Each structure stands twice: as structure tokens, then as C-alpha cells.
Image (tube, rainbow over all chains, first blue to last red):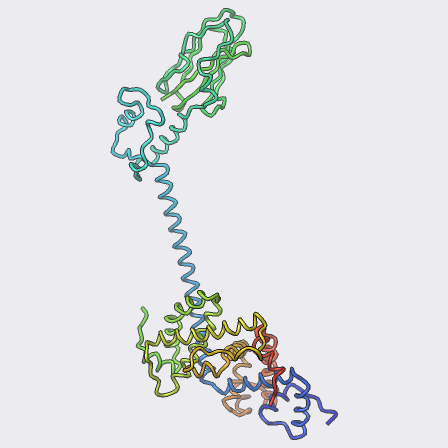
Length: 261
Length: 201
């Protein structure tokens, strides 16, 4: 009995009553002192009961099948929901974009009507605030989308630059030159020429004219001018507010504003 | 198109373990159970386990003739799930706070009529089934054939094994593998640890 050693099959054989008396006695003594062996015997006993209940085992397998099918369905449903959510968000984004960039219904208006809006009833250019359309009057229009985007872009060009606005027409440092035209705040239709004319006491010093857009960026600079005039062609200039500076001997003589509409 | 079954048809189908009826029960009843479990700090895995246990209990009830429902099958099923889930939470609470088994009252059943729920340790059974179904396919088949009391010689023929001695050896090794897997299962400590200290008869 001293030479006995418990092998893997002993637990099975013990629970199925296949051990001989001597083995059984040895096994029981080991059970008393070995809690892990006791647990293994208990587990084996439980397993035997479950295996003997073949109906429930078969049912469990079928439930597992149903569970896997349900998971697969859930997975597919998840993908469908994800796809639907993405489509929904895309649709919302498109609607939002159109509402944001296309707030005014010009669909029924002709181009001349639009010009009326810009010029106002008296043919005078309206301020930006006057051009604002109340939110409740806005509605989404799909027609003339591109044209309206341009209008939106143009409206940005008409935002005055506060730093320059303060200086328009009020900076004159030199008595050597007198500006005859244009007026310091001049409005003209885009594409027309603007004539800069001045009377200089000193023809030796060249005059430079610098042009800035309404963001304050230098967009054009004339060469050194020794004549009394300069004609600016605005054909390629988009509508908007521009500022110009006349420089003589590195001194700014006048800052003016030019509005192209 | 999803066919709708009457409660009687479902119970009869479950009694006969018909796959389509089991699928139907799983598909139709799980969403309510999911809601119940997730409202009470459960996970998706808990939902599946709970539905499985409830179907097993329903199956066992259906075997007891006559089986009469006093409410709809769905209501009955959900009440089983509720009881099981409350038991689960009770066990979890005890383990979480390391309550003394001697001090606390025995696991509550919450339903005095629910004899099967009270008598069986469902969690333990679920753990055992889980590991039984995780065995290699040949082990599962061998053990099933063995417990169907098919002779070793016939099993050897059916499974293309050399001889009955090999079948016996393989059966011992499969059972041993299964026991070791159960002991190695993270959930094992919860349901079997105290057996070590219990009195083995």
C-alpha cells in the first residue's frame, strides 16, 4: 500500500466505484488530508451528473447556437446602425452647410433685383447691417448655390478694417503735394478706372501708391511715379473695400478708401 | 419573416429541444432581459448567461407535466430571470464584501415557489457547462458517448480509435483536462473554493 500512487484515472474510478478495497481505503485517507483532491472529486461528481443529464447538455448546446446566432445578428445590426448614423450625420452636415452658406432666397430674383438690394432704393450702397436678412426669414434654397456662395464671399470683402478706417482722409504730412483726386472715400463700380491725380511742388521726389485689401494686406504697389497722375484699372479686382496710401519720400501723405461694387 | 409561436407551442418545442423554438425564445425574450440586467449593473455576457440559465430552468419545468402558466410565457420567463439575477447580485455582494458564510443567512431565493432555482446552484452549473463545451471536439464526443453507456469497443469503432484501452486512457485524460480547466477558471474560486473546507462525505 505504501507504493501506491494516485494517478489521473483514480478520481474517475473512485466516483464510478471501480477502485478495489485497498485502493479505496488509500484514496479516502488521501482525501482527508488533501483539500484539492477533495475538490477535484467533488467537481468530477458534478460533471458526471451533468453528463448523465444528456437532455440538458443537448439543450445547452442549442442555447449556445442561438446565442451565437443572436450575436451575429447583433453584430450585423450594429454595422447597419453605424452606417445609418454616418449617413444621417452626413445628411445633417449637408443641410447645415446649405443653411449656413445659403440663407437668402434669391431664387426668384433676377440679377438686376440683386443689384437693387445692394444699391438700395436710392441707388446708394447699403451698409452691411442693412443687408442682413433676419434669421426667421431665411430658408434653404438649393438653386443658385454657387452664386450665393460668391455673394457670401463678397460680403466678407466689404468688411471695413477698423485700423485703416480711423485714418481715412485725415493724414496729410507734407505740404509738397496736394491730392486732387480721387476723394479719400471713393465708391465706384468694379472694372472702371480710378484716376489718381496730384499737384506736386517738388517733381524730383517720386510718388508711390500702395493698395491694401480690407484685411490690411498689401496687394499692389505702383512703381515710382514722377508724373502728376496715375490711372488704376480695377478690371481684375473683385468687389470690396480697398485702402490706398500715397507715399512721398517715404512719408505717407494720405490714406484713402476705395469701394468697388 | 419571423414566425410567431403561441406559448404552448414554445413550451412543447422547448420540451423537445427544437432549435427553432430555442432560437425564437432567445431572440424574443433577450431584449427585455438585457434591459433588466443592464439597469442593474450587468454586462452583455451576464445577459447571455442569465438567459441560458432561465431557458434551462424553463426546460426542466416543461418536463414536469402538467405545466400550466398563469401568465404569459414571456412574463414567466422574465420573472425567472429576475429571481436568478437577484440571486446573482446577492452572491456577488457577499463575495465583494467577503461576507462570512456562517454569519449571513443562506442565499435568498426571493420566490418560495421556485424550487429548482433554490435547489440548484445555477452559477456552478453554468461554469461546468461552459468548460464542458470548451473541450476539444473529440473529448466532448468521447465523454458524451461514454455517458450514453456505449461500450468502449463501440466507441473505439465510432471514433476510429485503436482499441478500447486507448478509449479508456483518452477518457481519463479528457476528464482530467476538464477538471484542471475548471480549477483554472477565474470564476472557480467563487463557486468551488469553499468545497475544500467543506466536509466530504
